[in-house]
Image (cartoon, rainbow, N blue to C red; front, side, top):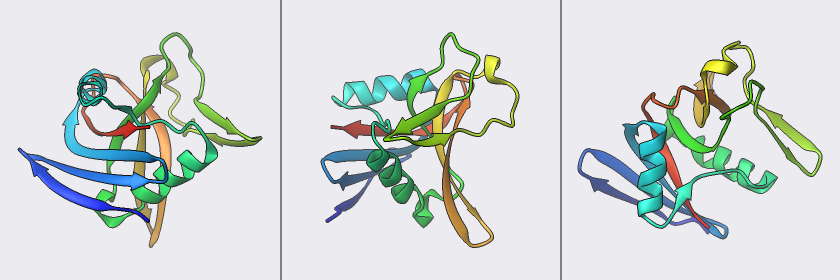
Length: 141
């Protein structure tokens, strides 16, 4: 079962969700990637990552809740030296990031976002300039 706890922290909204053996903290305060990474580390956590198909699906399920409508969150994995599209491969099932942007050389940090379109909720993974500000998701394994 999932536990939902909402706690206001300064101007941030923190939502901690226990999902299977992982705990995610959703931070809506917008910061650059490095600050998000550091904030998670300071809590003894890490930025959320999809290490399995179950993780990928669980993060998608959590992000498809109304309170995350059209929000972006930093997640882990960095594309530091490569100019290629991100992809995940879990047990031969592959999920690929949006590739229509054509600016891979200029973007280096990963984010996950929820979207609601025509009554349908969805989640996609993308990259953005590391200095841009987004919410972030901390992950306690």
